[in-house]
Length: 474
Image (cartoon, rainbow, N blue to C red; front, top):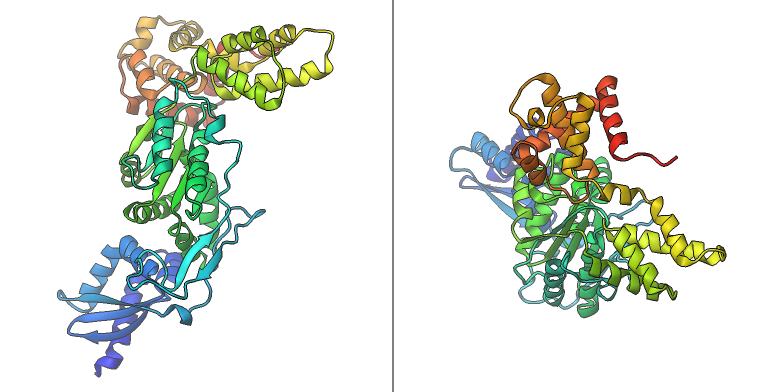
């Protein structure tokens, strides 16, 4: 048979095999657009829509391609690529971030391309222009620096001066709720846009990334656009990365991470827990989160809390007496969010309740803050409440006993410590409850969650003890 005809026959045979291995939607998106163009000396050359398309196929399906080609052609099989001219393709449609507010980047034609164009952009295309989705209020000027976040602020300032060129890539920021993770991450993005306006910066949450990925997968040709869009970014900020659950979207993030990192682009992630404590994440993705710098944000000390309150009061244009600010900073110790919430609530009440002083209002407001009740909790108090409820000794709880009641009590103590105590790591919980490692604590929390969903009696145990620890306001 003529080699000019044989390449089509070979590729058709390959497609039959590949179609039985990969998912139908992936096959439709990543293999249907490929066309065979020649077959010479055991080398099959195929035409692909773009360099990005080639990079992704090789990254995601290398083993499948290698096995299939050897099966169809033989042990000496080789695969070559030819990129389809961009003028012969329809305009790329870039996916939006939210259905309600889609992002519509503008693609500019580069009429005078460089003699050595970058392999990481489409031939003939220049920068995309998008809304970075950054809140101007979350700038460095409004970020109070203290011992709780000093390392993160320092790293962020260095990144803003040379995005993608420091050792802090990726930057992984983690800590409990309300400690300023989102503020710090967005402050870096804002500073980069101020210093380098041409940089393409995007802020997105892990859940938003997952939602748009799922939409892209369900619509023909959208997945190619989705991947191409993210691989054109200079700075990618993903907030609450723990929401990125599901093998499909994690695989997409893995390939986007590799592409951007190898291209010298900046990656910033935030999470409510350290990389080692993330559940249901692929190990290869977790390993990449650890490549750069992981920074933990901790609870602010009194000096930092007071400074934050003063700064926020000034921004609101309200004169709050020092004794009131001191009272709030002393009573609320958990995080910045609860401090700001208390201050805004105080300002609102003070504007309508003229009969009481600001200090009296502050006392009333803090009494009703659930966060303040939680701030008094520690692992010891959780252990004592669990032991009291199940009528067992603390020695029994911390022992290696495998009796069902003791094991369940121990697991509930771990679960409640993880969920009720702010900024409490799995390692610290395990150390305090019998010297267990973080994996054991993780398993215990997962077991309790499962049992609460299926066993009403067990769920009552947990809710009863939780009520003992955090009484509801009457």
